[in-house]
Image (cartoon, rainbow, N blue to C red; front, side):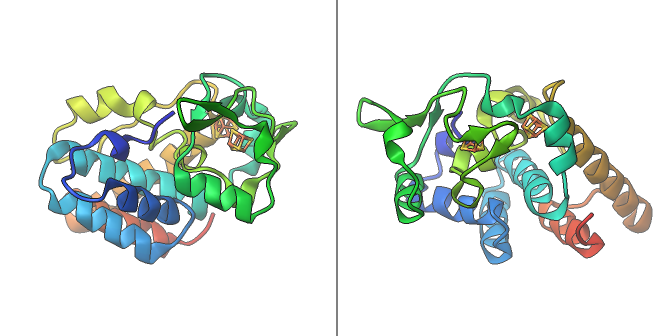
Length: 207
Ligand code: SF4
Ligand code: SF4
């Protein structure tokens, strides 16, 4: 489940961008501004689509309380699918947090979380504070899920993401985001940029 920034030809230290993106997905708004400005500044439509999708994911992770939806879903994203690839900075964070990394699978010098995930208890993640990058990216910022959306998107409307049918949290997050986009359009008579959408969503506060 690689995060899609991984596959972009960005021309400099990709690892650093991933690290900053992970901080953004955890709610570091300075990091969010840096990564969104960087992606938007590339002036490549795919990169702008990714910037929007990262904004959606930040809203889902930080600005919305979606525990009830995840409980109802039963934690499907941690149960189904192929093993989750980890970045080196994920491993460092897991070790620093005292997580038992013997539960990870190692192959070709890379570490993976198998699915069903051994860190899941019921529908809950038992390592929530040190969740890996790919887990923080689900579902809006996961390449495998959004690659067709990214490839086919063209401005000016912010991309409509693909949301797996079982992902009730993603559906509710998108309802909230779509309504914010519509409100922005009503107020300003145009589509929000990724930066503007993030700020607009932040101004609405946590819901
Ligand atoms: S993020 Fe979506 S798929 Fe994962 S547990 Fe929550 S509702 Fe279910
Ligand atoms: S580490 Fe947590 S969020 Fe990631 S797959 Fe496992 S239980 Fe789910």
